[in-house]
Amino acid sequence: MANLQESALPIADTPTLSRARDLFGRVINGHDLGGSTPATVADRIEQSICLTPSPAVVLTEGSVAATFGVGRRVARQTSRILQLRGVMEPRRGGKGKGGLRVCLPGLDQTLDTIRSDIIASNSPAAMEDARQWLQAEIAGHDDPLGRLVRAMLQDAPVQQTRAPCHMQAPLPTWSELEEPASRGHRLAAKLRQQIALLPPGETFLGSLASIAEAHETSLEVAVEAVRILADAQHVVMRRGRGGGVFACEPQAGRALHMINAFIAANAVSPDRCRAVLNRANIGMIDLARARQDARYLDRVERSFQKMQQAPNATVLGQNWYGFIRDIADMSGNGVLHFIARAMAGSILIRRTRSADLPEAAARELFEASRQIHAHLIGGSQDAPNEAQWRCQLALQDYW
Image: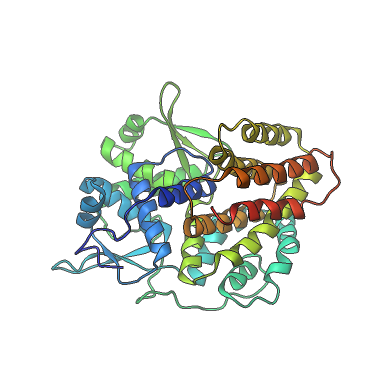
């Protein structure tokens, strides 16, 4: 990959690459709504890094602005998002040597983020269920993914590993970034501290204007702070009447990007990720069936109906991700859900080969989903293993 100080981003966008980002966003962000411009630019850069993880790449605000046709302000926000995702680090220097360079995370950095964002919020019972369901796929595997998942589930001590970059720099925290004058980032850190003290659930924080006024800053700074928090999935921004900025249940956005970068850095194959994903999905389907929560069953029913009513094969495939996500929520196991999202996201960003899903693949995907649906509502005693594999096989040559 060429140095971005001297040339444009070396990946020209295509419908297939765009579809990969769309599907990646559905898994990582949980919805198909477009993100902010800085997050969208960061997605394209992260995709390029995952496809060709070269430490030689150096980004500057100027190169980002020129490549993507955005202003310096958006380029600066993109830079901060990429740092917090753990895929780039600041590089200082004059005469064009400064900017950001690729520095994908090592095992310790990845685990620190996962434990901060995921492990602390899950019960010992959830951890034990996750260990039981994933044991067959991590036992005896001394590869990077096996070591990561075992350590994440507290099944093995963390071994010191070296991050695949020239310097073992610590990951940027919410209280520090490369630019001390970053008022937007400081406001994001302050808002995040406030959000941590709020009760669970969604809480209205105010409009962008009211947040700016309350913190005696400009609207521009408030926008930057909210975009940083939205990318990490600590807030959602809604437009129109009744809209504004809302604190939400943490969705582990930063940890998901981090594990995606770790998988790319260590060249973990999509097939290896798929094996772990399959076990996690089977476990969540089984746990969801045992739970039989009427509220979640209603959500699953609606998402299955969206698949039934899809106008074409591609939309049916897109809706499948919502169906599986609602099942994961019904399972009540945040650990398995996180691992499934991490594996699926990594597969999609690297393996997607087609912008559209063929009719035959969509039919197979739907019939396998019908079998999973029947299992969930108690109409079928068949184990979900075969149906889940059918879903994966239907998708694997395309998405």
